[in-house]
Length: 292
Ligand code: SF4
Image (cartoon, rainbow, N blue to C red; front, side, top):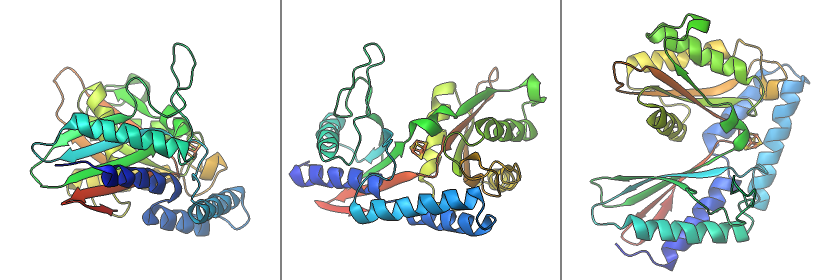
């Protein structure tokens, strides 16, 4: 498969769309939340401002939030594709998107404090490659804000502080604790991505991948579908509300998956995504590019 300039331009466009256009299901959920909050409350007003900002970003093609986040790619590619070539194309596209101000220069060397200026650096962008049997390349991108990343949490069960054992009841306890600890930090209302089991590292990879699921999908695994609905309902009774101002909407979505664990460990990983849930997908097949 050849990756030409058209493909690179497609990647720049993918980044522009991710940074400036909030997915429709998120906008719908935020509008619904605004209606649910008490009229003229601080929560309702916060959502009013958020939605005004979303509209302006879309119209003016400017970033939805000043923090354009960590670029996290999940890429599925057919047999025979060079991931080295893909990575080079992505790096070029990211540098160009930064120069065009679709992204804030956001990559900082933790040892020197120096910003690379183009969103490239050691171990960034984050790319998860997966070979698949389909003929097309699918590139899914999320922009993960720092504020919401800071309130992600990982629990090792049993967790005696909450009497949380190694079972679904224990899992639910620590998930709700993570929401409670986050309060308005991380720019609520947010979405939870959860992984039950796995090791520490894959827990975060899997929990973040949940953010690509549309808000209204139903988990095909009944236990997880039930957990998602219950956590959403209970979290929204915590009165944390939009930006922590109190109110009925603390979360707009909960998505969970699981991974086999070793007998000695039982991790529950909770990634938190802010209201600026920026995700976009691009498919490349026979020279044609489509966006979702
Ligand atoms: S948490 Fe999200 S909405 Fe808040 S500042 Fe960061 S990117 Fe923006």
